Length: 214
Ligand SMILES: [Zn+2]
Image (tube, rainbow, N blue to C red; front, top):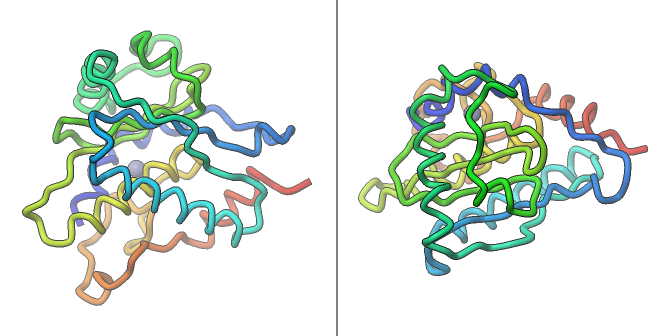
């Protein structure tokens, strides 16, 4: 399925992602800011479903962590600089220097008060989750819904969950038919019935190690 291949170019960068300390109660929440053009955008519902998926999953895995939407930024002026940055990262992500030598996020992005900023982009870009220095510590960009493509809502909902998985510290692997696979083999017809692609046992272990309950 090509949609999960999209984010493979950024895999190397993800190794750099800062570790999330899991000490205080505040650190038990991943605060998500969503930037979107319109409150009517159908991707908002998909994003909320992906958040709910993660909170169910984190609970099942047995870690004390919550993904919470803290702000919805509906804007066209601020979004321009963020869109430009998203295009830059999406096109050059895999070939950019990381860390302090990496591209500086625009003020409009760096000034948002969340751990993760997710742009529901106006562009048909390759989705990604890009680690930043400081706070927010991740910038996620999501492509447009392809309304003419059958089943794209389900695909995009899994793409959003996949990118959120990166912001929780998960990286790619090659186990097909799973949420964090990249590159992935094409999905068999039977898998089309799956609402959410599953995590692997290694993903679950990783989450437990990272966010162990005290
Ligand atoms: Zn990915």
